[in-house]
Length: 202
Image (tube, rainbow, N blue to C red; front, side):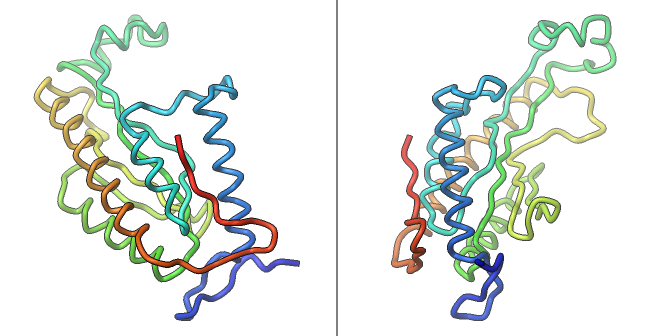
C-alpha cells in the first residue's frame, strides 16, 4: 500500500510520488475533457488563461484544478440572467461587476514546489486585490490564487476600475506564465512504476 506522504531529499513532507502522479494524470484527463467540451456542466477554459494553464501543468510538481480568466459584467450583461431581473438596483450603482480572475492548484510538497509558491506570493504582493491561500479542506498541498477581485462590500465598480482589474489579471497571467516556465527548467528526478510524469499540451 502506498503512503499518502513521504519526505524529499531535504526532509520536507510531500505527496507520495505515485499518489501525486496518479492525481496529476486524473486532473490532466479531466481538463482535456473540459477543453473538448465533453463534460456538459463545466464551462470551457477561458481563452486568456490557456497559456497559463499549460505552463502550470507542465511543471512536474504541480497540477491545476480550476481557473477563470476574469470577466467584466455590465448591467446589460447581468440582466440577461433572469435571476437579476427586478434586483438590478441591489447590485449596480456603477458601471459593472468584476468576476474575479483565479486559479487553483496542488503541489507535491517538495522544496522546489514550495519555492514556487513563495515566488508566486512575492509576485502577487506587488499588486492590489490579489490573494493566495492554502486550501486545507482539499489538501495540505492545495492553493487558491486570486488575480484580481473587487472588494466584498463593493456592489459595483466604475468603468476605470473594470479596466484596471482586467488589465491586472492579464499582467499577472503573463508574469505567472513566465515564472512557471523558469521553474520548469532544470532536472527534476522522480518516477513511479505505475505513472510516468505527465506533460500538458493544448
